[in-house]
Each structure stands twice: as structure tokens, then as C-alpha cells.
Image (cartoon, rainbow, N blue to C red; front, side, top):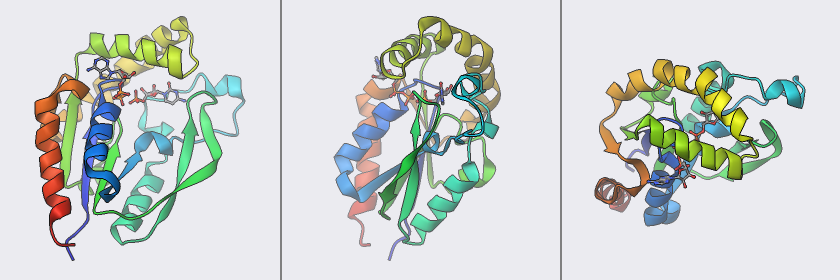
Length: 207
Ligand SMILES: Nc1ncnc2c1ncn2[C@@H]1O[C@H](COP(=O)(O)OP(=O)(O)O)[C@@H](O)[C@H]1O
Ligand SMILES: Nc1ccn([C@@H]2O[C@H](COP(=O)(O)O)[C@@H](O)[C@H]2O)c(=O)n1
């Protein structure tokens, strides 16, 4: 039996990670499972909803990365997990969980997944989705206003106060660990096709 392969997909907020991962998943169907670092945001349930809007969500302390590491290790041992479900609208974890069964390829996505050494060491292939900051900001404004229930002012304040400075501390410096860098994000067909072929080759091997 071949080892399970873990692929990490990092890159700044709104760089196109989800778009890349969805395209990888749809080419490889149920042979690939996805765990997003964002599922593992701490619930901060001891704080009021108002207090939770003020948290720095771009700092490593906002995540329960130890739980993600434990869950990846279980999947690698062939054990199913129940992963958390996170709401960006309520800024907390929901009560339900989602069962994730082991698969030959595990994709981990998250803007700062290369920052944590223990997490990084679990990854066999590291991909960084690289998109200019101005494009990421425009995409983030549209997404957070349309999908995450945020006001324009709150998105701009959060970006200048935490997202941008934390990106410079915890995302950009760790790009050097990537094996593959995808410029321009989710619409880079050539880079995504190459990755899909690599993953297809892995899942076609004898299990
Ligand atoms: N190449 C692109 N051009 C324009 N918009 C894009 C592109 N790639 C992604 N988007 C949009 O930008 C937003 C963020 O993309 P997403 O894939 O969710 O990024 P991430 O997972 O890195 O935060 C989404 O609303 C998505 O539809
Ligand atoms: N309650 C939360 C939790 C996270 N965020 C922001 O989400 C960004 C990460 O998601 P991407 O899909 O953009 O990688 C991160 O930059 C956090 O600022 C939030 O706004 N609220």
C-alpha cells in the first residue's frame, strides 16, 4: 500500500486558493479530500458576538492548528475524522461537524499553513497561489461584502489593521517553502492542469 499524499495549498487571502483546490478536487473526485485550515479557527465562544468581530483572524493564535495536525495524522493512519464547521458570519464554530473519510490524497488549504513547522512537515507537495495584493484586496472586498456579511468599511479597516501586516509576517516570508508557485491564482489553466496530472498520477498508482 502506497502512502497517503498530503498537498498543501497556501497563498494570501483571496489569492484564489479555493478556486485552485475546487478545480483539483473536481478532476479527482472522491479520491481526494480537503481540509481547510479555516475550518479550524478557534470558536472564541467565551466572547460576545461583538467582541468576536475585533479578533485578529490573521494571527496563528486564532487557529487550533494542533487539532488540524491531529486530524491529518488520523487520516494518514486510515482513520475517519469529524472536522469542525466554521461560520464567517457568526465568527465562530457551528455545532455540527462533517465526517471526512481517509483518501489517497489529502489537500490542506489555508493562507498561513506554511508558517507552522509541524504542519508544514506533514505536506509532501507545497503549492503557493501568488496573486498581487491589489487584486486580492478587490476580490476580498467583493467576497466579504457579498458572502461573509461584512460592510465595505469593516473590510477596509480589517485589511489595513490586520490582514496586510499579518500577511507580511506570516504568509509572504513562508512562500520560500513552496515546491510550486502558481502566479495569478485560479485562472492559471496551465499550472492547474500540470498539478491535476500529477495528482491523477498519484491516485492511479496501486493503493
Ligand atoms: N482569477 C480570478 N479572477 C477574478 N476573481 C477571482 C479569481 N480567482 C478567484 N476569484 C474570486 O476571488 C474571491 C477569492 O477567491 P478564492 O478562490 O475564494 O480565494 P482564497 O481561497 O485564496 O481566499 C472569490 O470570490 C473568487 O470567486
Ligand atoms: N471570523 C473570521 C475568520 C477569518 N476571517 C478572514 O478570513 C481570511 C482567510 O480566508 P481566505 O479564504 O481569504 O484565505 C483571513 O484573512 C481572515 O482575515 C475573517 O474575516 N473573519
